[in-house]
Amino acid sequence: MKVYEIFSSVQGEGVDVGLVASFVRFAGCPLKCRYCDTQEARIGGTEFSHEEIIGELKNLGLSYVVVTGGEPLSQDGLPDFLFKLSSETWVKRIFVETSGFFYKADIFVKKVFVNISPKPPSMGMDFPLESLENFIVNFPDRVQVKFLILSEEDLIWILKIVRKYENYFSKKGIIFQPIGIPEKPYSESVKRAIDLVMREKTILFRFNVRVIPQIHKLVGIK
Ligand code: SF4
Image 1 (spheres, protein in one colour):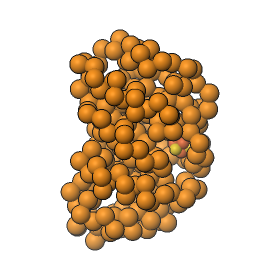
Image 2: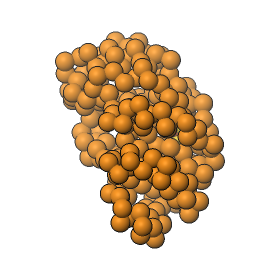
Image 3: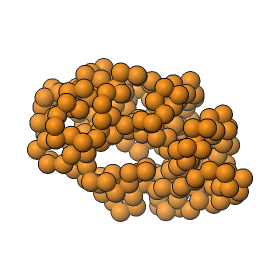
Image 4: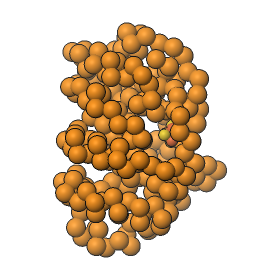
């Protein structure tokens, strides 16, 4: 598999923000999101065997593993890799970070939870909603959605999804993650996202709503 980097840090985003974990960032992504924040990992990478990756992760000495990219679900060997990784006794839980463009049921081996960041209109992509539906309908307890947001148009798009899958979001809550814009302070994006969300009083009233910034961008870590 093509690996961009393996390292330890804290989870910088989503409901598990702050969790100390080992990370494997796979290289490669066929998509071209406008504000991609991992451009460097979209191409290239170094070929590693499954055993080599698992060995490096084990050496980091932590029991939670985050599998990210790039787009890890564009890697052919991912289900097999996750099966081998989940069979390791030192691994407690595996979190896969994905855009949600590509639905794959066979990644849901034991210990695997999937964090999906659907790409809203400001990312310039035509996001396949049927893929998101497959994830949340087939694996509701193993999937967490975090909505990237930058603009009013994004918010309208997100609210349509929330209304369509109201039962799911009533249970899981709604997470908004501000999109960073290159050359601009991330704090501006965070304030804009909070302003947008706070206008939607009907949503705030009915759901458990959180705006969670990417802390690694705020503090300047991986
Ligand atoms: S899916 Fe992720 S890695 Fe791929 S282009 Fe979009 S933001 Fe970048």
